[in-house]
Image 1 (cartoon, rainbow, N blue to C red):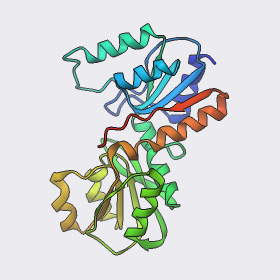
Image 2: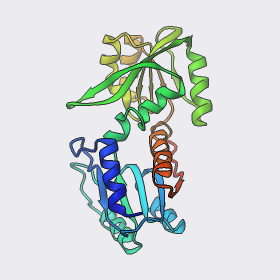
Image 3: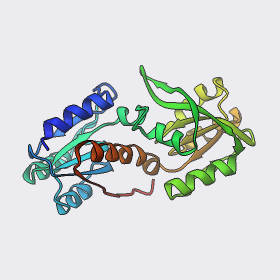
Length: 248
C-alpha cells in the first residue's frame, strides 16, 4: 500500500486540521511503500525503536513530535526524525481529530463503552470541540467505574462529589477537567476523563461534580485502537498496537 493513499484517507476520515496546537497529519515521511502499520499513544524513541524491531513502515500516534510553542532545546526531536528517516519509517499524528471524531475518537469510544446515547458535542476550547456528552440508563457511580475499569484494564480514581445516580455523562479524555464550568451549566452528573488536576480538586468539590479519572494514557488508547481496526479492514494491511505506558 502506498503511503500517500493512507495519508489521504486518514486526512479525509478524521477531518484533519492544523489549528489545535499540534501539527496534525503526516509529520515525518519515510518509505513510500507500507507493509505494516503500528499504532500507539505517544511519539517517543522507545516507540520508534520497537516499531523498527516490528519491521513497520508507518507509525500512527495521538501525540506527535510537533507542538506549537515547544522548542527542541536538546535536539531530541531532531534525533527522532533522523532515526525514522534512516529506517524508512513514516510518522502520522492526530491530536484533536482523534479526541473529537464521532466514529474513531477517544471520547466517542469512552461513550460507546458505557453505551451512552444521544451524543452531543462537549468541551469547547479555542473554537474547537473536544469531547461528547450523552445519556445512559441511570446507574450508580461505582457501577460506572466498574464498567470502565474492566474495559480499559485499569483502576479509575473516583472523585465522588455529586449525585449518587448517574444519567448524564461528559466524555473528555486526557485532561478534561478544565471543562467543569460547561459540565455544571449542562447539569452533567459525571465527567469521565484521564487526569484530575490538583488545582481543580476543590472547585470540583464545591461545584458538586462527580469525576472519574483513568489516566491520560489509558483514556487515549481507545481512539488509536479504533482507528487501527478501521485501517486493518479498509486496506487489508498488517497492523499492531504497541503499548508504551506512562503510568500517568
